[in-house]
Image (cartoon, rainbow, N blue to C red; front, side, top):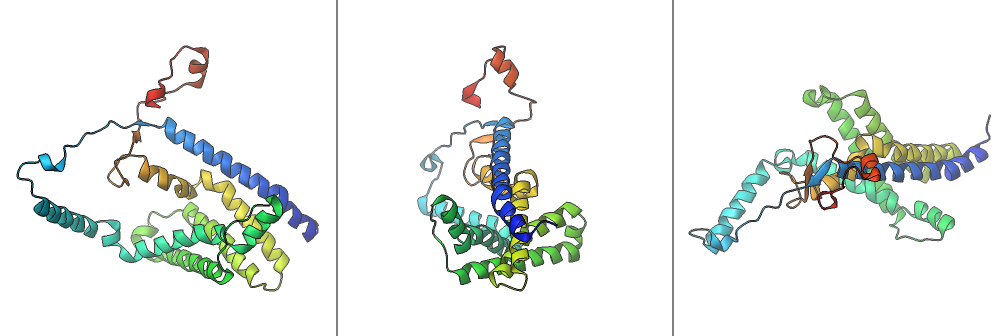
Length: 253
């Protein structure tokens, strides 16, 4: 049986490095794949508002505001305000707790000599507990709400467990319950597993949320969007481009 000290050093050293390498390599692959599967969107030129017939600044503003309020009522926020609030809290705490955790930043400083901003430990502990509370809400929602249960698969439950595991073990380790060494090893193992699987599972929406909302042109975009999905088959062959048989159109890449 491998002693805990040796296993701890392995998980903290080689395994953590491997997890980060897979995470960055997988993320790079997915981003490149996104650009391969999309192309530049056609630019649409809009007329200035002042050129519209019977334009009135005050009337137009009131009409625009009324339209926005009406749109908000039928949006996700208007239809599911509780779900939207809990989801927002979950994602903010999911990112902020590990990034600004004092213990994590101390390890980074010891390893690479780089020090980042850290939040008070009580704040990050509360954030971690909120992540667990939100995860339990999502779990019971999948079990109890019929329409959600009907489309849930084993993978959905597994991904939820993998997301919550690093925070649950982190809370237990922070409060130093008996068996601390085993708990901290489980914490690092679950964190490494989450990093490895993130680019290749549904967890990848953490990355693609920003790409999809800011770059792809659709009704939920944060802006006009500069790209659209490409459905015309493979548009770029590395082999043909390298051999000079096909000119690569960099303008439409």
